[in-house]
Length: 379
Ligand SMILES: Cc1cc2nc3c(=O)[nH]c(=O)nc-3n(C[C@H](O)[C@H](O)[C@H](O)COP(=O)(O)OP(=O)(O)OC[C@H]3O[C@@H](n4cnc5c(N)ncnc54)[C@H](O)[C@@H]3O)c2cc1C
Image (cartoon, rainbow, N blue to C red; front, side, top):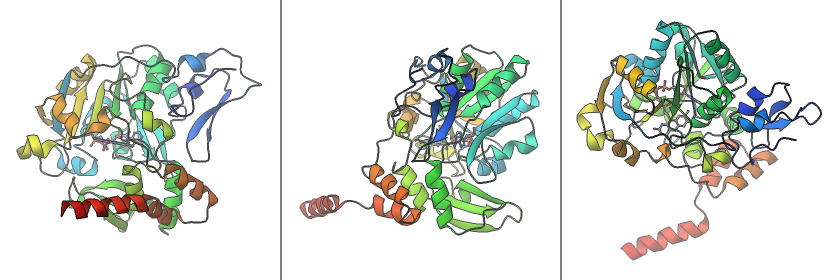
């Protein structure tokens, strides 16, 4: 039987699932809501392809940044629809204009995230914007390989583990493939997302979720759900007050592998890294209009050449300036101390997800006592 990655490190990238030639691997949801590969002993032929394509078992070498930029899409309405500076759209539009195919994350009808592809500019908005939930990659690596083998250009974007999964699956360099990874804080559980949505009591038919609604600016963004047909807002609040976002940013329900990610810090084989340039106000305040500034790191000559063909509003910066405000580029998030308790209680189904998140994020009595003592000492 093949020995796949230790479950603490398995990111669910699904390279093994895509590579299995006899369909003996199934991606099955565990009790925390994350997909893991399960090998069917009866049909497995022991070819070991699944082990060979695993990014945990065969990690890539780190690449060094070739060029780093702060950049903005010149189209401000596209920038407002995007999470950062709208650079993903700029690159995706170019690939589609050249007759290529774009892979990325979008919502399905049940408001879960899945990877899919488009060849049309009109459909690109489905792929725009960060969805802070782990997506299902399904057979997208196979589909990408199929397009590449038939001579099409492919842009594949995703989290670092998904890009590592694709590159391991393909096992060779394709001149027509460009890969983008997003800087990744970690991916929350799809099951927690489902439970959280249930607490909102909103009719989700035709709803659209914007985790990074910039109505109050890029720095102080809102979490908003609207009706995608009428455009009316069904729910909105500052992300800093939204319970799902709070639990995400405080690492209460990230995938275990996100706490020791083997694909970040430029080890996925990506050509370009995209993120938020959070430190922009400290370095180039005149460049910040609070509508979103992207951080763009080119890791390969292909990435440099592609970015040089575009015409965003941009300035070249020192990579260290980017890292200073954005540790997720290189470092994994630390697990919240109440993570195990949170999932144990969630699975008992006795407390609603919003109350549970709130409860598990409250500081423990000892921490409260410590902060009171510290305040007294400071006074
Ligand atoms: C889970 C997650 C965590 C992130 N953490 C950070 C962080 O800590 N620091 C930081 O600077 N940036 C982070 N980002 C990236 C950031 O939010 C923007 O996605 C990125 O800067 C690109 O922005 P854009 O304006 O160019 O394009 P946008 O249009 O906003 O970006 C869309 C791109 O994000 C991809 N994407 C969206 N959701 C997912 C998903 N669930 N899984 C895989 N790919 C997805 C799409 O495929 C597309 O390529 C994170 C993104 C995600 C999805």
